[in-house]
Amino acid sequence: MNSGALSVLLSSLISQLLILLFLIFPSSNSVPSIFSAHYPLIESLFPLLHHFISTSDIATAVFLLSCSRKRKRTHFSDPHAPEDDGDPGFKLWKMGRFGRVDSSIFRNPDSFKQFFKMNTSTFEWLCGLLEPLLDCRDPVNSHFNLPAETRLGIGLFRLATGSDFPEISRQFQVSEAISKFCVKQLCRVLCTNFRFWVGFPSHNELDSVSTQFETLTGLPNCCGIIKCARFRIKRNTGSDVINPETPQEENIAVQIVVDSSSRILSIVAGFSGSKSDFQVLRSSTIFKDIKKGLLLNVSQPLYINDVAIPQYLVGEGDYPLLPWLLVPFLDPGAGSYEENFNNVHSLMCVSALKAIASLRSWGVLSREIKSEYKAAVAYIGACSILHNMLITREDYSAFCDDLGDWEPKDQSFQHYNDSGSLEENLTEKKACVIRNALATRAREKSGCSVDPSSSGNP
Image (cartoon, rainbow, N blue to C red; front, side, top):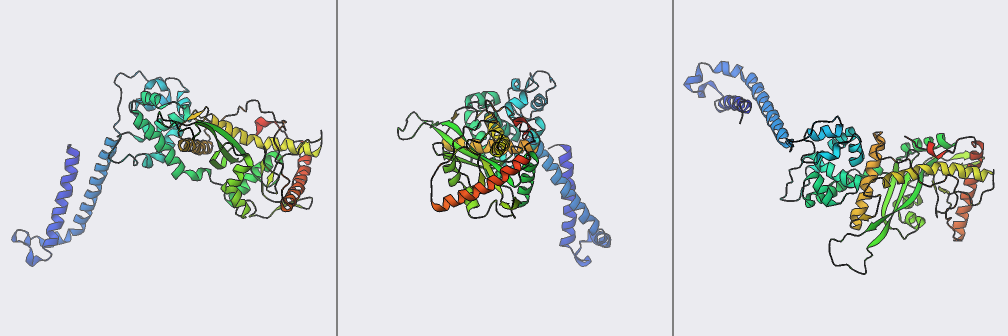
């Protein structure tokens, strides 16, 4: 123990001894002769002694906490490390924040974003947010003695690059078992403790979402764009025994709802990719909540040409036309108000396309996902939460503007077609009236730009 710790502890012990003597001999009659002459003085000094012991205890606690904190922050460093080259990520490594990480991944100026899909300030913010949870969930009887930065770095490296576990183990100089645990731990913490980052907005928040869409397109009461994407998975059973009844390759259907900035408002992942977009929608909680009246129809409708316009979502693909789900017109005439509506509709859908492209920019989702089905779903959920966190912090390291071969006027979508019951037909007729009314507003606003690159662009 060093001199600082010893002095603090001795002062605390002395003060407690004095108080103890005072409590044992509360009156002058019981005070030993050695103290009897000075008892009034001792009694008068009791408040001061009480303050002294309190101060000593606080000092002791602070000192020991600081020592514990310093011990916890003692990381490995490489005495043969190269000189600092000015890269912030490299400086973090030099300070020991990543333990025994291979410094070569921080050599280039953009390497930090490349390997973690975020800038250094966002990494520090995220580490502070997750540290209590990352530090307290080691397996029973197995303490890894890894700092939170290294745990977070291992998890993000897997998500950002899609590297396999042998590569992660080499880069971070840990065992494959530890790499797998840290990745699983990060996904579990995000999907369990921070799932509210992709929760559907409250009533007041929806007003802001619809206002942003109206500013962009002129169409009121739109509360989001719904889109269904599919990610391919190749099961990794970890065994040489293959069950012929269990498909080894399949697709995972992922349904998202986004706002005009491509922020994910809702996500449903885990359905079989063989299901149609509408089948996934009907199986989702958001569909059931809308049917129960818990979402979208909680505010007063707006009126266009005496037609009540409720809150609604915009979608394409094989979704049906519903009063709360508007799809494009089929085969619109050139220059018609239907074509104008479809152009505006395409502009709105760009934000969903950008969100999906940004999810696919994460390395683990950019190719065939080689893992168990449950782990693949966790990867999708974790990347979605991180996507929203990055947008909130205005960190667009993982944001993707490249939409590939998408064309804004491509109307070659599959349209939901089902004769259905009389009630369904009446519902579709009501939806047609709402869409026609909005189309007239789109025609009035036809002078607005429909350049897809302008939608939700950071």
